[in-house]
Image 1 (cartoon, rainbow, N blue to C red):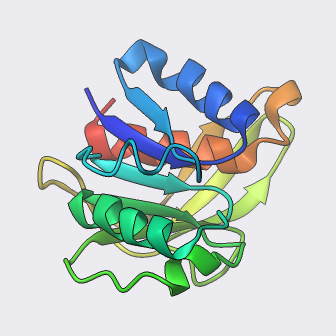
Image 2: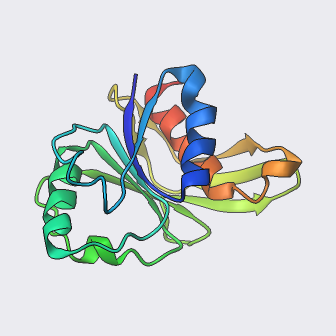
Length: 163
């Protein structure tokens, strides 16, 4: 059961929770108000879908949280100033995703009912297996085609854990 910390809008967190619920994933939303309470939690992944405005003390907590995580999943299409303030010392696997051509996982095309993504670099799964560079298809429903970043985050978590 993956334990995942997420920085995102509440509706995005709820959508991701709903999709990963069947896989026994535990998702905890990280906010400026809750960061102190979760600083000792050992998340397997931290998903950052939006920037978070933190004070000096909260940056220290965020550094603690990230230093314990195995993976950092980042929306590569936004500037995340919070990460500029944090000097990550422990090697962590960072996976970026989005339309950005330098991202680990880029969106090649978006159609009404599917997204084609390109894995530009290999990714090591939790169990040590390797996902090679390739293109993959992610099915989406017409009503969810505006939630592409949520779908990418869900896709990555499922790939990392063989879900």
